[in-house]
Image (cartoon, one colour):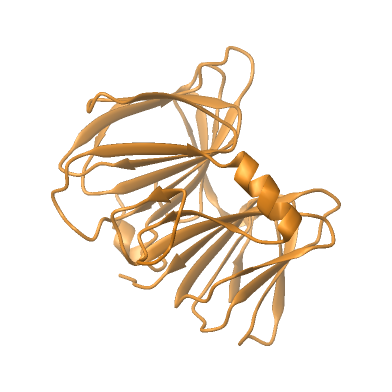
Length: 246
């Protein structure tokens, strides 16, 4: 279990957007070389008012976006348009190829999104799109001290959204002050704090780690993961559970 501090992320500002990268991203990288489990990309982006990314192409990738703050307008060449707000998740299956844009429609407020990429486990799928508002479910789960499975391709799970990779799942939790939330065991785990602070420990690891906003905790272990609030405010955390790696 290892901490990857926010201060050590690489950053790039381009086209009215500041990208903060948990894995090497900008430039000519072999994404699989730096992956953890099946997670290839994990970017925390601040989009300026009126900024964003114009139409650009992807293929053979499952692209997941979590809106932390603000709003985002999505459009793509498969005919999907959407207006996303904080607490919404979007999954775009690029499949055989798709062009899309993600823009901040506000003329005054920035938007903050976490964009994550995993490959599909079946090639040459048709492009597809889905979205889900999860804030109400997350707030209800917070009162009960549990996480919400926001996205999963795992058999037997009932996620908010599906994904074309049966090796992965993404849990989200809002952890109240003084409370803790547990996450199921997985061979490869990536935990990311979008706001607040947590003390993180795994059943089969002797040490614990404190992680704050923008910090990631990665590892491979067999025990369940527990995240306990270390903040006076609500903490939000994204946890990928992965049963395959590159």
